[in-house]
Image 1 (tube, one colour):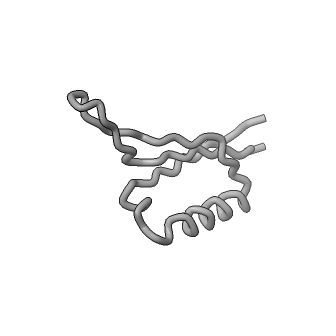
Image 2 (cartoon, rainbow, N blue to C red):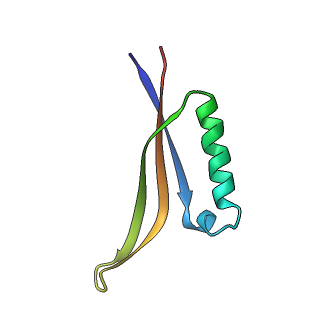
Length: 68
């Protein structure tokens, strides 16, 4: 069994859009319809060592699908 992988990265600027959730669901449904399965989602945080404060700057979604 072989797999291929796809990474979708979304910036916080996009997260602030009012239509974000609808667009994300549409994108996930589009990927699912051609065999992609979401296997992981991670927030990328950027912060200051001095203040020990972090802010999520991107979301990364990892998908896989069978190739055989």
